[in-house]
Image 1 (cartoon, rainbow, N blue to C red):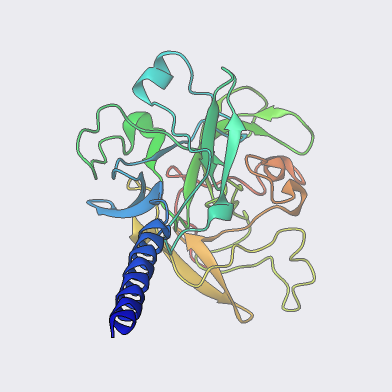
Image 2: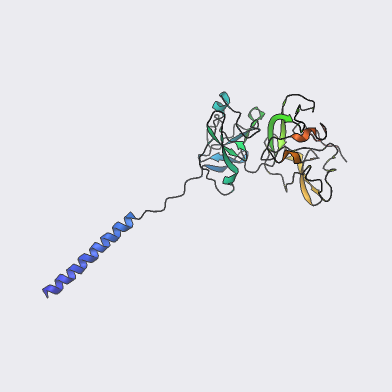
Length: 284
């Protein structure tokens, strides 16, 4: 009888030790940590959806950054602090592949979006502030869906000569339209209001002056009027127009940002850049 009681107590003791061991094992099992927070995100503001950091501070583009490196240095950098994240984490609606890193002239790192270096504006206080929009007519909020962006730079033709805004030789910083990646857009002097007179029906000459195809206008800088844009049908494709001028790329620009070789091809003024000063196209 005594031996039976001892055996039962031993079993209970073993079970108790096993339960304790199991509890210790459960406590020692590491839990899966939550994923790191996005360090770039989208936030709704008075200007629509803009790119922000993880705290909701608005990010900006500088239209003088024509080549994709930053020319905002010294006092400019004090007013417009740079944004940099070593590892980009974004939510749905953004692509991490659209972001990259540059080494600035001062040696610091800076994050870029679609080739544009990203900045803060030191006058923005609260999350979602967009006080930097159109400052100096060269600063604009960063957006994920720009159809049209602006660039301020020197026009350099396919002949490597510098041109002014009236297409005479000379130096001048000119503002002109680009796509979201900073690729120059042009008009054709022989086109008419919402009428493409260049592109052939078989698109055999499209490689020379590719049409700017888009299904619909999305975001534009706040200084532009959406009513000045529309799309036209060009043999089954949709081409964007501005003030009636169909918009094109130039093949020899090779889809590179800030290139504007087309302004002197085949001679200056035949294929001008487009900007706010562009007069409306003539009626057909």
